[in-house]
Amino acid sequence: MLNFKLRRLPARVAVLWLAVVLAGCGLVFPDNMQRFTPADAAVASADPRATQAGLDVLAAGGNAFDAAVAVAATLGVVEPSSSGFGGGGFFLLFRAECGCYHFIDARETAPAAATPATYLDQAGNPVRGLTVSGPLAAGIPGEPAGMAYLAENFGSKPLAELLQPAIYHAENGFPMSPRALLGLRFRKNTVSRWPAMAEIFLPGGELPAVGYVVKQPELADTIRRFAAGGHDGFYKGETARRLVAGVQAAGGNWTLEDLANYQVVEREPLVTNYRGMQVVSAPLPSSGGIVMAQVFNFLSAYSEEQLSGPQGQHLLIEALRRAYRDRALYMGDSDFVDVPVERLVSREYMDAQRADVSLTRATPSASLQGVAEDGSAGDQTTHFSVLDSDGNRVAGTITINTWYGSAFMPPGTGVILNNEMDDFSIKPGVPNEFELVGAAANAVAPGKRPLSSMSPTFLESDRGVAVVGTPGGSRIITMVLRAALAWLDGATAEQMVSLKRFHHQYLPDSVSYESGAFTADEIAALEAMGHSLKEVQRPFGNMNVVTWDIGPNRVESASDPRGEGEGRVY
Ligand code: DON
Figure 1 (spheres, rainbow, N blue to C red):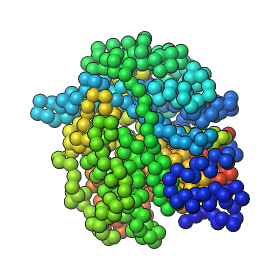
Figure 2: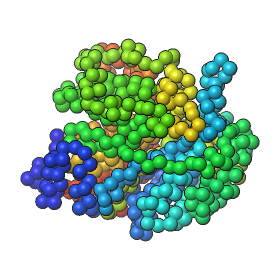
Figure 3: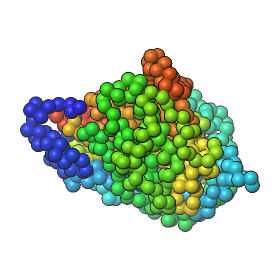
Figure 4: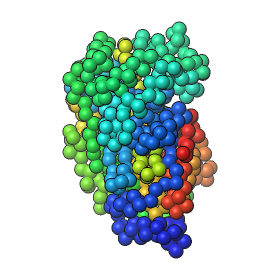
């Protein structure tokens, strides 16, 4: 289990190792961690220009939090399909100087005028597309507030300086990549409905070629106003007026108050322990930390032998089935609804769940208590990981939800609005774009944050630390969880991002998998147990990982081979 023996460790690591073992669980490890510093700093993100922006900030003496702002802002410009100033996200931080964690919830909120009825027809059925395309799909953005909060409270450099690379790329343009074009092809019809959006992304009304230089001068001006005014430079004044005017003119319901009222929330990260590994991840309004804790608790009762091969795959699928069922039934924004978090993450709860699990047969999801009634998960959204040479860390997962968000851009802003309203459960049991179902806990309400799967995560053990995360909608949690299991088994950063992926989310009752995730024998064995397996056409995820192995003091950084990103060590 442990990757190296005490007697072979350098003295300082042996002390740390002992502290971890004696502590058993809880947050003791980082108290000791502060005494050690990594040999290198590292950034991994979905775009080489964003990675470079982060490294430049570190080289100029900035810390991981400064770098995170530069990376996030740059991604919002050069990876416009996935995140940006019109979106939201989560930033998980570790501060080495105090050994403390912070979780910054910069998730979008529902506008004050949004209710379930906004998205239902007279018969009470969801109106197709309203939560996916156009201004009603957009929640009030949180990402600019998140960046301003990070810079102000944790960074060492002025926000305006950290935004320079984003302004540069918005002004000077970036060449259209194959991946950006793939997403644009999916959204072409919607993009063409909104002139401000089409002007930038559909030159002459047509899809551009790979290499076409996308310039975003209005976005550059929006970022300049943000740089000059900080939080209020986005949420009040000229930018706010333009955003609201554009949304309202196109049939949306935002008000200036919605923007002026937006605030990030600092929350306690969700911490769980599994076989000597401490997993620090996202709390509500992300389901990620809870679902992972449930799965780890479920698995903890089985032997390593039971957890290997098709038997282990079966048990992991059964754990996911049950945890995702709970996600659908119970989870939502805990500022608005009571979610039984303590119970869900308790060992006893998963002990009871395990009682009806067969070691040899799949449990049909329909046989579990579910929600009444009855898209494509891609790799939009973006995740980056940062470690600085003091040991500070940031795991940031940020999004505008599906490809190019709502595909709506209020004129004069350059800001692509998210379609995060689709992460609410518009009607109990009706699947969203990620085929997730939900219930009352995740219903739309004014000011509420939609339930997320984004899971920026730290893994910590005697081995060291890993900073992990990925896009992938509902599949995010499974991807991060399997990367955690791989890290526990000694995987490198490169191996973690390259791991072939599979996933189960309760409904639909099937295991989606990438080619190569299972051997032919494993497929046969899982099907014989009653699992329905579906190979996906497109790979899922775009993971970015930084690892620091304390024993050899080795830092590694890796970006998913499925994407166009870059992990670098500095
Ligand atoms: O918050 C969530 O769970 C989603 N909005 C994330 C979307 C995502 O990862 C898109 N990629 N497929």
